[in-house]
Each structure stands twice: as C-alpha cells, then as structure tokens.
Length: 498
Ligand code: IMP
View (cartoon, rainbow, N blue to C red):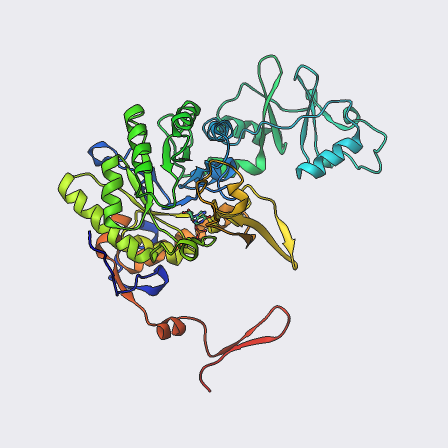
C-alpha cells in the first residue's frame, strides 16, 4: 500500500459548535431521552441499554465497585479495570452483581469493645454506627456516635452504652428495600438492623440512604434486576480472565487496548466469541473506518474510538500516533452507518479520551457517538477508589493513566509490552458525590438536544448541525470585557475593548 498523507488537520471536539434547530413540544427538555444501546444485540433489539450516555473508564484510579454501583444506579456503567489480578477483578464483579440496594453488610463490634477503641474505629472508618454482635454473630444491640462521649465514657465498654436488642425495631429476613423502608418509618430509628430467623445479623439499612435506593428510575439492570457489571480484559491473559469474570456474573466485556487495530485483539475477540457467544464484547480503541471494520469482523459488538486525547495520555508525544477525537468519531461513525446499511446490524460507537465536560459529551453525541467513556470526569468523585489529599488548600484526588508507571507496575496491564510510559500521574480537583454532579451534566446535554430539536440520541445523530469555530469565535464565546470578583477580594479583568 502506498503511503498516505492527509494535509487536512484532524479536529477536536472543542472546535465544534452546534447550530440550533426548531424546539417543539416533543423536544422540550423534560421529554428528552438519553437512552442509548450499549452493545449490538441480535435483531437490533439491544439487550442492554444505558439510560445515561456515559461510562467510566477501565482505570485503577476510576472504576472500582463503588463507582460501578453508583453509576449503574444513575443509568451508566463503569468498566472494572483489568490491571489487577484475575481474582481481584472477579471479586469486584461479584461485588456489583451481589449488591442489594440499601442493604449494607456492616462492620460489627463486640460488647466488650472499649468505648475508646470504638471511637478510634469510628474515626478510621469515617462513620459512627456499629451493630454489636456476640461471637456467633447474634445481634445484641446497636451503638451510634450519639450514644457515647469518648471523654465521659472512656472507662466504659460498648455494652454499657449500646441500645439493646430488645429496645430496637429489627427486620427479620427482609429482602425488599420497600419493606425495610416501611419498618424504618414506623420505628423512628435512623437505622434498621436486619437479622435471620436465628437472630444473626445480616444487614443494616440506613434511613439516609433509602431515598437514593427507592428513587433510581434510570438504573441499568439485568433480567434478574441486578445491576449491570462491565469489565475490561487485556489481550494477554484472556483465556483465564474471561472464564473467571463470567463465573462472577459479568454482563459485558471491553478489550482494553490503546491500539485495538491488531491481530492480538482480533485473536482475543474471536476466542471470546467462540467460547462465550452470548457475551457482548466491546473492541477498541481505533480511530479509522478500517479499524472499525476490522474489529466488527473479529466479533466486536460495540467499538471504542479515540487515541492520544486522554487527559493523562502522552501517546501522541511518545509514539506520534493519534487523531483529534472529532475526526475519529466522524470517520468511524460513517463506517458504522455504511455497515448498518449493508448488514442491518447497528454497532454502537463509544467516544473515549479527552472528554472534559457536558458540552464535549454533547458534541461527541452530535457527531455520531452513541455514548462516551470518561476517566478524569469520574476520578474527581467520591466513588473513585482513591483517597482525597489537600494540596495548597485545595482538595484533590490522584488520577493516573493505565500506561503511567504506577499502573504499569502491575505486570499484565494495558501497556505491559512497552518499555516506556504512555501516561502520567497527577491530581484532579475533588468534586464530591457522583449523584451531586452527573444530573447537572445530563440536564446540559438535554438542553442542547432540545435546542437542536432532537428528542433522543438517534434523532440527534440525524438532525445535528455542527460548525467549526474560529479561534476568535472561541474567544468570543468566553466571558469578556468585564471585571470578575476573585476569592481573594481582587478583581480579574478580561478586557479586549476599551
Ligand atoms: P480522560 O477522560 O480524558 O481522562 O481519558 C480517559 C481515557 O484515556 C481512557 O478511557 C483510556 O482510553 C485512555 N487512557 C487511560 N490510561 C491511559 C494512559 O496511560 N495513556 C494514554 N491513554 C490512556
């Protein structure tokens, strides 16, 4: 094949703006659906949908069990990273599949535990409610931080201060959160212990959590109403890893590779298809139409697009490979649409890497992506499996790439065959709970779709009108010609006029 040189530069998401269309009753914000197919299913009747078009990246600093559970409740999914042992990853998948909304398996204390020890435990764990059990696990009472004062009661034991079993309302063999809620309401307690018929403690249900669990209309679940579990696999140990993940109950896999246009990925996809034909697998990452055809031919049931754009990514600098994400989406979704016309099979396309905020998600969807994957966005949340740190009075969370030295310490990680790093390690600004952030982003996406007269993502793909913006119009789109008050009492001036 002759070499090819393109003189037209590739485009990034931030170079595009949407032109509004006609907003109608049907496309009012409250009528907009963000439902989108997760993977191709037979007859184009997707078995799995996302109700929120975002997924969390398969990265050590992003997607553990807490992120997967909370994001699935909010309509998306998180891909459990494969840069860990097979056993650990399978345990994480089981953790998602066995999760019972609102039922917490609590840390317990013994009646003889001292109040000082209890106080220390409470500080370490960051919460204050502990059930008290005997050596066989029988519930004896509950103690909360309101029941003791560490100074006043420093010589006492837990059994001196706990609320005794006979004074508690306790649920026996309750399995349904609605029944637990009803009992909790009657009890006037803030927490309901659930025991089995031998009085052995099974769970706690907290009043403060109930709302979150009763009210998740967007939740993505399997046929048995368990949260959906997605996991990444690599092209090295898949013959051992995939069976373990399947045993743990995984619903969807993604082959995690920075360059998926390879015979290694082809082999992995074919092997999974041959041994687990019902298990949907996402292939990637690719940035060309050719790459799309290659992966679909190998058995991919959705394809992930993007190379070099991730916030922690140094692939472009290290290897010189990559492409602006917008151009990659445009070319790959053209290939997807051609393939659909030819075969009748609709293969979802996921945009991945460098998607910073709601506006980027919207542009990616408008260009043809079915949903997006993000790392940095989610790494800032409480549910990411990292601890907060304070740097220069700012609360931050660590975030590192799967190709950063820290992740590469794990031997079969995404970039393990390389002798150089493809990612960096840094910090992102802590943003709080996912539940307090994602709804705002979703309402921005809906507001744009409403302006563009599109009631759902499929319609958005057809109707969106996009335009490249000049550097000056980007500047015009930002705040300008005004003095803005700063936290330190000074004013920041952004004045181009006079
Ligand atoms: P972000 O949302 O901009 O932070 O990008 C996240 C995406 O970057 C992931 O979904 C991966 O596709 C990609 N990625 C993860 N780790 C690395 C790395 O170490 N180098 C390059 N790309 C990475």
